[in-house]
Length: 301
Ligand SMILES: C[S@@+](CC[C@H](N)C(=O)[O-])C[C@H]1O[C@@H](n2cnc3c(N)ncnc32)[C@H](O)[C@@H]1O
Image (cartoon, rainbow, N blue to C red; front, side):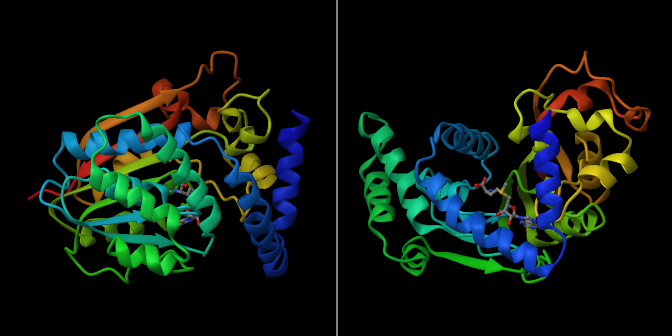
């Protein structure tokens, strides 16, 4: 519990002004890279496989096309995993709100994937060559050229830079919970605009309490104990902003913008012992239990 409150206090302090926020990002890039170089990739592989299964299940990139990864992060994992596992030509748009890329961490993660693929007979020669190339690159530019990819940063989070009906798939992993609550409808509206008719959105959203990542003794949905105003006052911060929207909110937003919801998957935790505050009473029990929410939507033809 102490770690939970300490993390909240530290993140709030880092959020005070422009200088503290840049310090947080600088430290995150320096120390984060060290940590990420040693990181176990099992969770990444598992989530990447979930993405590939969904893409194949719905033929979302059957004839290739353009895929956009929002909040691509430090190592472009999901965009590159998608291309490595794609049976047709895909052009890749990698988008973020700040430049947190870490080439060493990226190469280290994909070299761990290469070790896992060594004994996997289902991996073909092209995939092995692509993976070998990733491990050999000296710059991001080399990587983008080889994979027909572009990297875009828009610090205001706007997707206006993408043309109407220009892509077949938009995906994100553990990103949408960080989009400002007041901006998320606009963002989903832009996704609808960017997609070609019949195009898909696949988003995995961390609905869990991110402060619990620092303290494994507290519930993964601990924020439900607090009123909305109390949580905002005590715990909300800018550097690790979390909008605490629940699955039903996302479903409503996607439907309101014209999407069809095709599939929803949930990871859950037990909240029977958690004294849930009355402010959350309008959500279903299923929603309150959800820690990771995956939604697949389609723009009607
Ligand atoms: C938890 S990280 C996940 C990174 C990456 N998807 C991964 O799983 O490795 C969240 C990412 O979302 C990005 N992000 C935050 N707000 C965003 C926004 N409004 N639009 C797009 N990306 C955003 C952050 O810069 C960061 O790269």
